[in-house]
Image 1 (tube, helix red, strand yellow):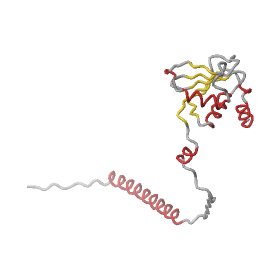
Image 2 (cartoon, rainbow, N blue to C red):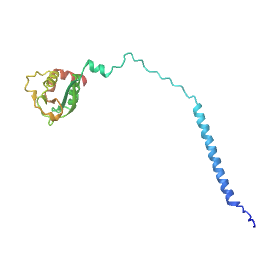
Image 3 (cartoon, rainbow, N blue to C red):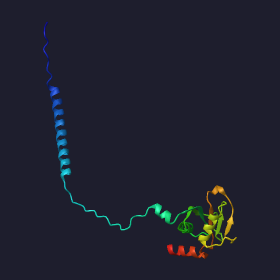
Length: 180
């Protein structure tokens, strides 16, 4: 049998190998540059920064401690602005929260022409109505300001509709005057 002579391709493969070798060389140089750059960043000392925290003399109070000192009563109240004074419902909500009453909603009433502030008991919980009226300084016998219209669907114990006479309540007036 006769042997065939192996042919050698020289032109095209050599130029392809040369291009690949050059690309590998460039990538290698870039890789060495990145390694050098990262090594310089890790050994850089920079400017030292001193952080000082203020000393706290009193320990922070826990929510449990605050609640035990002034427990929030289980009274859900909604405050409705019926007098048209901008932001008064939110201020009265803060006033009631100061008296440990849970205000769940403060909003506008159906109209703005209520002449008197009305406190409406929404369930049989007489004590919740009594606490809210006492915070306003209204006696329980006052039929002008206190109503009893049960409506369990509202999800509140007491509804307070603020009327044009809101500033006639001394304690409320003092509170609003101090926060303005």
